[in-house]
Length: 147
Image (cartoon, rainbow, N blue to C red):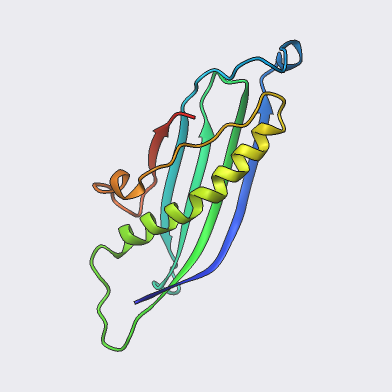
């Protein structure tokens, strides 16, 4: 079995300061806020060997800034002759795709927040294998991390 990455796409970005940000000093420390990571897998209707993995990062309420970043990866699976797909293939694709997308999402979040006056917010490293161990890989799974 071979995985083929067709594309990695920045799907959506939203960024906003809280309303009173101009009244705050640039040295104001960032309050701790939860960041939600949500990942999901969709299988193509026309070709079950083509899949889309989406990873989203959303900031929680109460921070100096709020953001929502979404990346997608289009993946194709190729099989050798007479090879049978493993039964846990959707979970494997979700874990692999989310792991590969995290550096892209992490970079956008850090760049956006760094330019927002109060310093960057870094997403914590995430073990997607552990997070998705008991999930249904075709539905979104949310992980809470703190910067």
